[in-house]
Length: 297
Image (cartoon, rainbow, N blue to C red; front, side, top):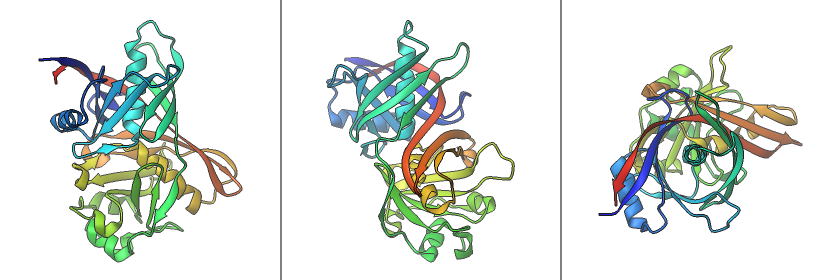
C-alpha cells in the first residue's frame, strides 16, 4: 500500500493544542480528487491541504484544500500552514523567504520567517479583494438562526452583509461579546442566510490587544465551528472598509477567534484603504507543528 508523508500544524497560534489544526499531506501529485476528499474526512479537521509540484517552476507548490465535505478554492489557515510547512521542511533554507502557492483561486504570495526556538510566522496577500456578493438576511432571520434576539444584531454602522474574497461569508455583527458567547451553532441555515459559512463578530474589549472577536460556523461543509478562519478575515476586510471610518493608508486590526472552543487563535489582519476603498489586505499568523507521519493512500 503506497504511503504519503504528512504533518499536522496548529495555525494562528504559537502554542500547541490551540489555534486551528491543519493536516498537510506532501507529495500528493498523483492522488485522485476523490481520495483527497476521503483523506480530509479521515483527518476530520476543518481543512486538509495537499501539496504537489508547481505548474510554474518559479512557484513553491501547487495545493488543493478540502474540508471534510468539499473542496475550497482558497482558505487562509491552510495557506499559512502550508507555507510554514514547506519552509520548515527545507532545513537548510533561509530564515526569511517569499514563496508562491498555486491555489484554485490563483497564485497566492506568502512571506515566511523562521525563528530559533519559536513558532514560524507567515503572511499572505489576499489573492482577491473582498467584495459584497449578495443581499444579507434580515436581522430577524439572522437572529433566529443564531439563537439570539433581533436586538443582539448590529452595532454602530455595522449591519448583516455577505462578502467574499474567494469564499462567501454571511457576516453577522453582534452588539456585545455576551451575544457572541450566546450564539448557538446554526444547523443547515446556509440557504436562509445566503452563504454556507457564517461569521459572527463583535468589537473587542477595551484595551485588548486585538480589535475584534469572532466565531465562524459552516455546518453544511462539515465544520460545526472553526477555531480560526483566514479566508473569512480576508473577506472581513471589505466589511471593515465599508463600515468603519478609517483614514487612508494601512491599518492593523487583529482578530481573536476560537475562544469559545477553548482554542484561542490570533489572526493578523492588515488592510490598506485609499479614497475610502479597500486597496489591499494581508493575513498573517504563526503556526507550530504538532505531529508527523505517513498515511496509507
